[in-house]
Image 1 (tube, protein in one colour):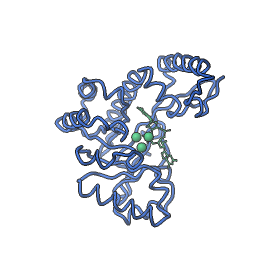
Image 2 (cartoon, protein in one colour):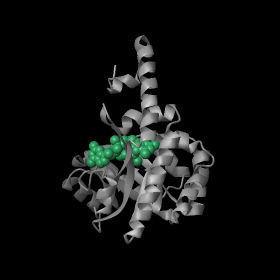
Image 3 (cartoon, protein in one colour):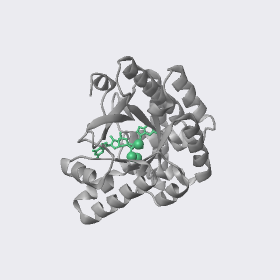
Length: 272
Ligand code: C2E
Ligand code: CA
Ligand code: CA
Ligand code: CA
């Protein structure tokens, strides 16, 4: 069936044939969508809380499916990773990001905002990843520090590989963020050895800011980020109350519906 409920991802043995078929169909549909340009990039603003200005954006991919409607990344990123389609999708997002930065610069946007893009495990396995990114930046004559790479905590298990990636990025002036901080089980371990430029606090902690436990924990993360000289971005900020507590605690940046939903490129170019 064309069912896209989460249960599809945990295929019970009895329906594994149907699961495999659905996966194969989705895979060919995704491949075709990429060729036909049905994948789109949105940019969600990230606000510097104290100054109230947009410091940058996170690139989030969308699949405008003709029959299914918009398919959320959660529905297809995993499939894309399993089938390696994530590599051309990642290239597509990177190229759009570079074009967008170049266009913002052409229009005189000052200071030029940064754009962050999400990396998947497959992309991280590519030993030439950083070189390929730098080549695209150079092709558009962009300063490397306007691009941020986001790596989720679950991908950080291979500390040696990530340490090498971080060193290389820093050599070239690129910034790297630790995404979804707080959702995994080795967050502090990752921070112990890895030198991230930014920490992105998962939205589950922001939602807990109406409890004293939540406030206490976010306070600890703010202090940790400050001690490590990392920027801290709170994700999933939906209410003024949450932003006020974040500001009081000293969190530098906010991202979420309160600041802005993921925007089409035209909306960003027209001054959002
Ligand atoms: P993420 O990197 O943690 O991205 C943030 C997610 O939170 C986005 O979901 C965003 O739309 C959502 N969000 C933003 N503000 C709010 C808010 O105030 N409240 C709530 N409840 N949610 C908010 P989205 O766009 O569905 O993306 C889901 C995940 O898919 C991303 O999580 C990221 O891990 C992955 N993803 C998205 N685009 C790409 C991509 O180009 N490449 C790769 N490898 N992964 C991507
Ligand atoms: Ca992210
Ligand atoms: Ca995140
Ligand atoms: Ca995520």
